[in-house]
Image (cartoon, rainbow, N blue to C red):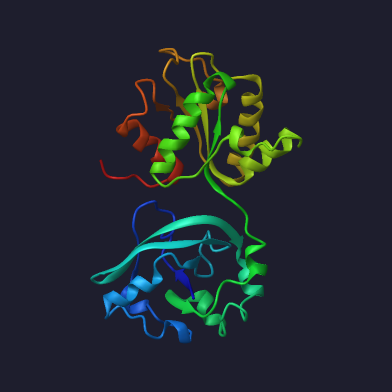
Length: 271
């Protein structure tokens, strides 16, 4: 059994906080395996823990071409909604789901244009998962001398539920690294340019140029981040200096980290 969730509210699936859907929308389009699960019987919701899920938007919304794949966590009923956490593993093009609609148990295409939560029979077909593209919330661009701080930053972001592209983890030995860098940027929703005591390295500058080209085309954020040891008045390239920076010079403290997460996700969290 897996879940298909379709929302008509922009930004519903863009948060690292609890996600939610009106309980009245639960169960529309269910298969046989989901018949015994009901929002009216909260104990039955435990069956959804750790199950696969596809999160989509209704047709016509700006991000409706992207489908998120992952697993559900902490599903519970909080009047008048079902709330849950979502651990994302990758994304699919909407067209993949459309092509596999019958095998996914989507018998009627009204499901693509209507907010609901359906429980479908069986597992998500392997053919769908083969099209899965790993994704990252943020690409960390850094000078090699700052690699240890970049690693710490990735770990802090992971604690907040954000995945970060880090060269040491993603550049496979033996393959051309320039192409892998560009692919990493393309698969990341935002780019954080880390600036430490030694400033910006030569390859980091090339990464920035690629990131800025994508930012112009896709309106994705490019965030200058001042690391511990960065000078009081860092010299930033003009095209980077006009962007609002995040100051981590005092350390990876909660408040500046919240600002960084805000820049990455586009959602401001409460203090």
